[in-house]
Image 1 (tube, rainbow, N blue to C red):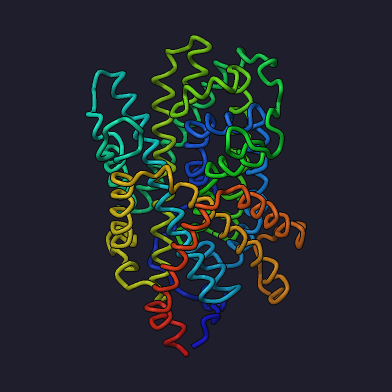
Image 2 (tube, rainbow, N blue to C red):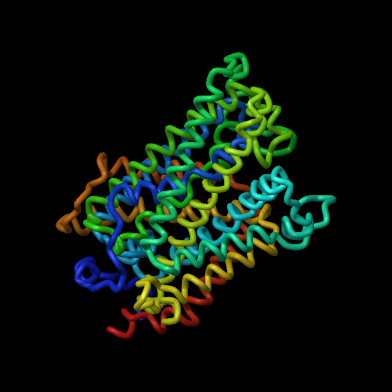
Length: 471
């Protein structure tokens, strides 16, 4: 049995899909914005600013450039093979089954831990908003055990509930998912624009000096600091845009609309991230964010005296992070659907509801797993695993474009990444640079996850693969 057996692009294109095609360019753009804008603005800006100072805007730019070059590679693959599965399917075409399984296994980790981590941040804003409205949730039910030193917590109830609610929406159908996401993204963008308009007048350029207090890479108080380490942190903000390509089988004219949706969402999100970061570090000295790590935007509102905006911003943050959870759970369900359809996961995960035209069993299974993770596990020590899994996927997709251009130049591509071979090479270089900024504990946990995946592949997937049965 050949562990590097590959899928044929033409076979994929000729296969009928039971999923419903209903997404257009702006639906995909909003799906991407829903995945990207959320945690980065409402949570990570505080930690990022403490890591690199006002130059956090550069860190966001570096992470965006990395994602931009990788996004061009994703767009080419999406136009060439517009089927569900994202990087998993692209790797199956380019490098073979075992590489595809590895990247699919990594993507499951990315989406599950990503959604659970964002749900924990969502919980913080939700508890704060409820407190402002006079509704107090017991402290023991606001976080997993051990999350906050010196505070007795047992279970993160809000995070658990929001993941289950979103899972229900996704299982109900792509139309419901689309409408909920589009509505929340519009409100979220409105809140962000309102914040920009109300606070830009309070920017003091002296707060931007020195612009790079820790340089590009250094050590400060026993930990890495500077522009590059901060870029590794805020890269988490862009995770999820690749899930847009998972919607290929539910997209109208995917060879054209998928590339547009991927690139437009990245462009809009990057402009908003850099604008917000410059305003926040311009209004408040970056060191002040140490007191507002959970809600850095509140530091700006307190500094400007516009506390009336705090409830509106909290609602925007809640909606912003809700769309991130939604898109990541959606992407997760489509990856497991694709792997099940190929025989690498049990058939259970690929069963499609005739009524809703969604892979409802797999959606509910991983939704419940993610909800339990968000409710009971301290995610502070696991969140960086999301970054390394995503960066690995980006590297393989970028390398896949190089390989397919060389081996199969004849295959039709509705979109071609410009500047090949330089574009994928630059994407790979940026990804490796960001991976280098992660700590060794993250690498160790990643190796353990990889080992578990290999046990599943050689114990189950290799034997049950449909390509194996065909041969």
